[in-house]
Image 1 (cartoon, rainbow, N blue to C red):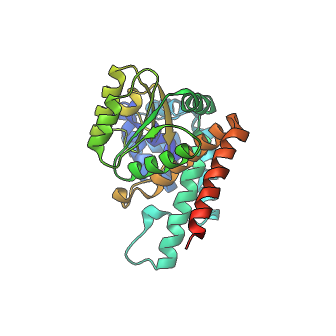
Image 2: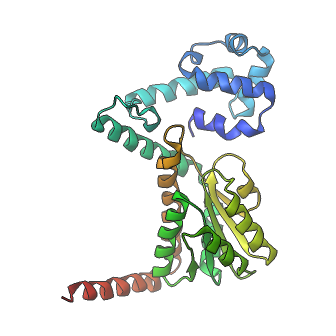
Image 3: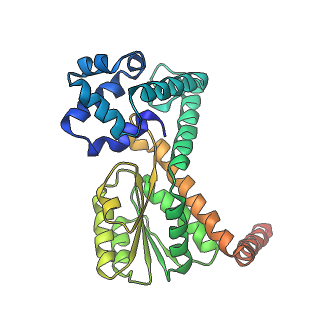
Length: 285
């Protein structure tokens, strides 16, 4: 995980002083690689001991270790043409430059998300997908479109899956879920109110809850039995959910392939048969 995403991941757990350090690093990341711990403390207007504690809190052995990793990361980003980051898109960009920035952002999001996956959690979710009587998928906006994609995939291999683009219908579907069922909640922010209400409704009847959210601590993750996380920079054009959607699709594809691997012959027969029927329909004039 990049240092930028690592700091963002810890951000809600930081003290007021630690957030001052985090904010300074995020806003001056190029300069910080040349600083001593004393210089960073002076610029962030905190004590030097606070800087050292912060660095260790986010997972580094010390300030030297942090600077080495930061320098390596920035050098790697330069080698990969860091101008091609979608959150740097401007009105002055050509369509070529904008397209390259979007592509780089998607690639970065996939790499960051897959490097963070807990495969123990991933396998537990696959267990639930395999053994639940029905799956109810909840999510709004771009997350709903990801849910619809997953519904289509799971239906092809014989799973009973409910997902409606109307969030009010999603609430109704969640209310019907019980201890034999699974509710899959998708929300990049992890704070979507109607998704939270759907989870609460399902939990009353004992439904298992799995969530796919952004990496920060959030309400939806806190309400879930198992949480999977996506890492995506959405600083620019946030409402378009460019990178978060790609990261969510990566996770659901991993879950789908994992499910197929549990009973490859049977589930691939379902897919082959449905494809065969569709080809026949398409050939009818």
